[in-house]
Structures are given as C-alpha cells and as structure tokens.
Image (tube, rainbow, N blue to C red):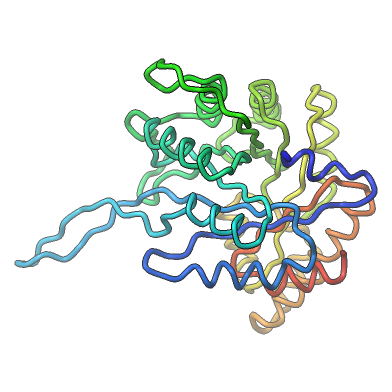
Length: 317
C-alpha cells in the first residue's frame, strides 16, 4: 500500500515520525529504541532521513591537513530495510539531490526495489555546510523535480543510459516537501507555491510540510494549495521544542516563526527541562487542533525529541 492509501482513513488521523540513520560506526539499536517507544501509537509509516557527504580535514604528519569527503550518517537504505523487516511498518527513505550523483540514485532505487521498499520522500536536500548556497553534485540533480523525473523514468522501465529493464511489479510512489512559511530560497510565496504545483504535476502523491509552530499558517497554506489546484493530501509536520536555545536556533536554521506566546514562554524558561515541558504543551495543543480539523496524518520530527513526541502522542492518540 502507498502512503496515501495508509492515511486515507477518514475516521482517524494517522501518526508517523522520522528517524535518523545512526552515526557511522554506531549500532542501529538506538533507532530501534526510538521506534519501540513510539510503536504503541500505530505509526502508519516511518521516515528515514538521508545525509550528504561533507568535506572534513584530517590531521596529517608534518602539520598538514588532508581534505576528504565523509558521510557521517550512511546506511539509509539498510536502515529502511531493517525497520520494515523487524517491525512490518512501511519505511519511507528520503531520496535527495544533495551530495548524490544520478548513478548513485539509480543504484539506490535498484536496491530499494529488491528490498520491497516502494515509498519515497523526494527532496533537494540542504547545501553543504561550508557552501553559502546549494551547489549540485557533478552529474547530480539540481532540483527535486529533476530527481522525480529520474524516478518516473525508472518506473517506466528505463535506466539512466536508456536501456530497458523488466518493469517492476510495484512502481515507486513518493511525496515531496511543502513550506507553509515559504522555502528560504524562494523569492516569494507565489513562486514557491507554483514550484510545488509543478512537483505534484510531475507525480508527487502527497506533500509533507516543513515544521511549523503556528497552525494558522498551515491552514492558510492548505487553502492556497487548494485554490491552485493542488489536491493531494498535505500532511502537517510538527516538532516539540526540547531545548531553550531552540528559541533562536530553529528560526535561524529552518526559517520558521515562533508565535509570540510560545516565544514568551520559552524566554521565561530557566533551563532545558522547563523548555521541554513548554514544547510538549505547545506541540500537544497543535496536534489536538490539527486532529480536530481532520488532517489525514500528523508527521512528527522526533530528532532529540523522542520522549516529548511520546508524551504528545499519549495526549492526542
């Protein structure tokens, strides 16, 4: 079943969340521990992030440094397979442009097909840490829609070189990202919405949003999408704040606004424990309202926030 099929129950709001692959050299048990804490809420699917390689500098003899490319969180495909095999919960690996060539993407699609993983979230991905703008990987894709076209072509039975393959019994289906507060590189909300419309026309079967802390911005975003003829499910993505410094870090990194009542509460926090409680209460309020409005699913960004997500889910589901 595709993600759209899994969240199509009109009588309830589905629950899903996101996990990160373990750091290079670490055990997958931490990922399993996160799932074990949240599986009681019947997640319809679990997203697995993908991370690009970054350049790091290694000390060499004689006081020299060597610049090498290193991926600190490899293994997205393997983690997705392990989750699906262990828990029988659909896994949704992220497929990104950033840091990957077209050939590497094709190999990932071949592996995922062998493993019986057919749901994807297609994203452009972030710029490299030391770049001031997104720079496509040589022989890679520039935009998410370009990556969609490669997946579409693969679904049609063609490799990159144009040679024909045996058609798969189950083609890949995929979602894309949407931004209630506009992508930080978009010149204006209208342009951002037009690009989302093109991604849906190209084959995206649903949209999952960037995190937001003001539900009104999500509802307004959905209204604008519907007015533009974007009629696929739009899944709200939310995150409980867990650290006091996220008052300034989240707006800076993710280009989202924190409503003034939430900002004031965080400003009054004496420590991270206080901030974590504020985050749980605010996220619970968000989730309850979203559920009451009949959203098809709520997707939780659980990085560093597994226990908070568990407490929110206990109050909502």
